Structure formats: C-alpha cells, structure tokens
Length: 419
Image 1 (cartoon, helix red, strand yellow):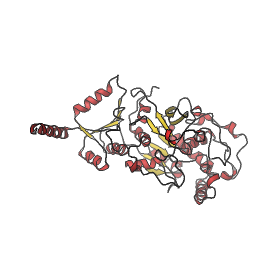
Image 2: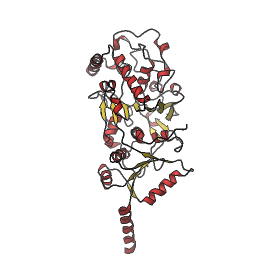
Image 3: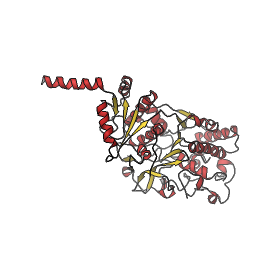
C-alpha cells in the first residue's frame, strides 16, 4: 500500500516538474469557469506565450506553453487547468490532426486590440459584450463618434458595436419613452454632438459613422454587433442619401416612396427587407423576428451549426462551445428572418422551431463581421432600467462563450474558408 502511494506521488511530482504545456479544458465536465478561461488565453498572448486553440477538442480547449506565472494566474482567477508533458501534448495534437477527427489546432498569434463603440457613461441599460470583457479581465477601450470619425479605428483589431441605432431614430423608443428624462437628454446630447461634428442631423452623422465602420471592415477589421446595432447598421448603409426618419426624429418628414430607394447592395448581411414606417412601432424593419415569435421561454433554444474544423476553420472557431444547444434570449432585435439574410452569409446558430437565424457571420472586403441577435444571453427579456446581469452567477454561460469566441477570433492565424 505504501509503495503504491509513493509511486503515485512520484508520478504526480514528475508530471509537475517536467510539464511543458498547460491545457485549459473547455468541456462541460472539466471547466468551472469558461468565461474567465478566455481571459487567461488573452493574458497568455499578452505575455508572448505560445497558444493553440484546439477546435472541437473537449469543447474547444486551449494548449499553452507552461509558465509558473500562468499557473498562478489560473489559480487566482479560478480557471481549471491541467499540466501535461510534451509527449502528452504531442499525442493530443496527433489525434487532432487525424483526417478521421473533426478537429483542428489553430495557432493564436497576438492579443487583439479591442474597441467598444459605446456612448460615454452608458445608458439605462447595460451591454453584454462590455460585461463579458470586464468579467473575463480582457482589456478594451471605449470609443464613440468623435473617435470613429477621426479614424481611431485604425488602432484596433476588433470592434464591438454597442446597442446603437445608426438610423438616427433614437432606438425607436419614441412611443414608450418620449417623455422620459433619459430619452430627452439622450436626444439633446446626440443633436449637440452632430452639430459639433458638422452635421445638420443626427441621422446624417450616424450614417457617416456607419460608413467609417464599413470602411474599417472592408480594409481588414473584425466587427461584432448585437441586438439593434446589427440591423440598424445595415439599414443606415442601405438608406444612404435617403431620408427615412420622421419629423419627431430629425425635424422634417421622411421623403415619399423611400422604401423603393433602399439599396440592398450596400448592406453587410441583409437584403429585401421592408422598413417599419410608423414611429410609434418599436421596430426597424422586417429583418427582426421579435414580434413574430411564438416560442415559450421554456422552449426557447437555438442550435449551433456543426462545421468541418479542417475545412471551415472560421465558423468552427466562432461556434466553439461545451454544448450545441444555447438558451434563447430577446432584445429589440432578437433574431433574423432567414429570408432577409444574404446568400453568402453563414447562419451559425438557428432556431428551427421558430424558423429564425440567431447568430450569423460573413466576409466584407478583407474583413469579417458577426451579428448576434438578442440583448443579454443570461437575461431572457431585458428591459430598460433592469439591473445588470451578474456574470459571477453564470461563469459557464454558452451564450456568453459565443461573444468571447469572437474576441479571440482576430488572434488566430486564418486559414482559407472552403464553404
């Protein structure tokens, strides 16, 4: 008995002394804090450690060069890790490389510089991406219209769009909140900023911002957007040179027959959509399926598509998770009508029960974009003024993992997508 215990101790000691790799497991059984794990990966890249993303291996695990500092950082942040030898790491990589395995190893090269496009001071509701970055301890900079229009985007590898309305209609909150102090103040601030930046209307200034963001992506940037920032961005681009805003938004009526003047060729993701004309309706267009949904909360899930890791590396990275079934959640823009999604855009997450696209990705020029429907993956029906989500209660959230997949996406050495 004593000999067996001694042997076990020596094996454990030998593993710790000669380990040269750290495996961050990302399966459901082995990782107690999936979200913090992404922060550990980012920390490793900042410290020039070699990192490989093991796609479809134990939930999309990470293989990192061993470091005493990294071990301590994992322990401090509550991230589970395994010490493995070079031989064990080689065996894992050999298994992954087998043509019979739907797996791939992707080298992560650098810590991406991250920008969050968001109003200074934020509004009476919170932003899921900002919360995810903060919880995972991934650094970012907040920028807004002044910075975008002065070409500050050139400093960043990855851009997230806060729940913005790029059409200049103040989120279509008019009916419910036009007398609310925060709405009045937001409108006043937006008008003052537009004037300061040399525009006569907020809609014109927001269009200029959207065009700068478009050029950033076309030039090779990575853009991630959620909720209303997704469809309002495309609508603003499609309506360039067309007045679609009513008088309560910009001081004059919309132009007659504006629907026929929409240019779908200018959009990133959507086509053939009908704009919502009434300022009293909390909706931008027929892209969003919020009002068409017939799913009870208990049944509201969407499925992540399964891609070939060796041939379709990009969507495989973006769908890494410890489950293929993700809880649904709502927002001003909850999901997308598949009939409005352009043919070249990948639908990476869908609800067959309601026939809706939840999570989509595409290429624009030299860059990439991902649109994610809904407001907060752990707050089913978030409303203005609701308290923020405490991610300490959701450290293994599959919905939030999709956000953080996108954060690491620019760090990867890309392989050509075949699909």
